[in-house]
Image (tube, rainbow, N blue to C red; front, side, top):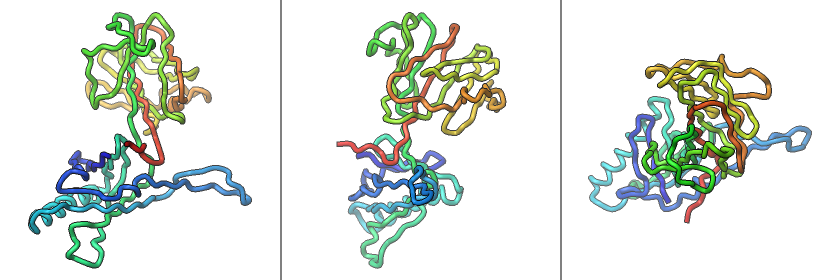
Length: 283
């Protein structure tokens, strides 16, 4: 089990390392959908509304002054996000939840101040994991076959330890979305490329912009934004998306095997973003 909290400023605390501990993490794995009801029939489901959970966080042993210092440090970390009205991230087993830790309940016995119930609140109760990043590049890459689908090189290192692979240019480009449901994604397209167009699982992702060398186009389906990055400046490219009804730039990536095609000597990265109502259990 891995449980940690990271503030919007990047300050992190491991809630399962001394002096902190959590005896019962089961509330983090509980979830419920809201049912849409019409004429006494369920017509769908949604996650709308603020969801609250409570978990016990304790401080292990030590002197009274050490316990007080640990409790104060935890308070300051959680309150940083409250004051800024900017959520932190609760990380559990590789997934994260954007949330606030907005209350501490000591109970009625101050002698037991080593353990408190902390209230977690989230207005988008979805656990997220950036599951896989795949790099698609033109011919000339290192050619060690990975799963008979991609070429992989150990010489490349990408942030955060993502998995990565290079399609074999001589074959159909494919990758597997291992999620059980369609995934959001982040697509980073490298310049130079005029009016980049990429087809994934038969769906066209196309934006009518011109990218010079060193420029990037980022399509983020979760944030529903399209941004051109040039010399560090972020420029809104949403108005230049393909507006045809069947070519939404935010169409989710379907589960299973997906074929990818594009024209020309171009490169891009595709990150699959897995969303779950609860983080996966680990043994």
